Image (cartoon, rainbow, N blue to C red; front, side):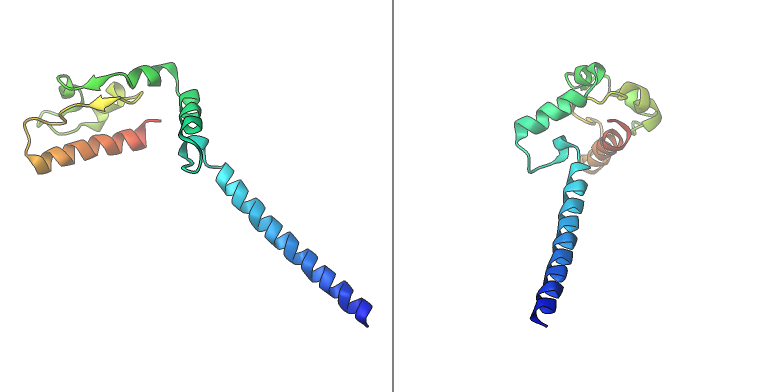
Length: 125
């Protein structure tokens, strides 16, 4: 009887080890789906190297540009952000949007800047 009890305990423990092993494997698998540059647990140097390695030459060059006096290229006739224009002008991203809108009040300026940020986050790599 004791031999059977020991055997059953080994089977249960083996099953639990398998379940926990699979849970760990699933956790590792989920983490590995995250690109290294987005993994806050990794060192900054590793994250930067990963991100730069993924960028095209055009995206790297775009990061050196700022949009200030030519903001009309991404505005409609009322001075609002125009995503259809931005698709061409900002297709590779941008390093900086300087003085998002000089002719708007604080609230309108924030709306304009947020629209640009949302576009860049969702429509560019």
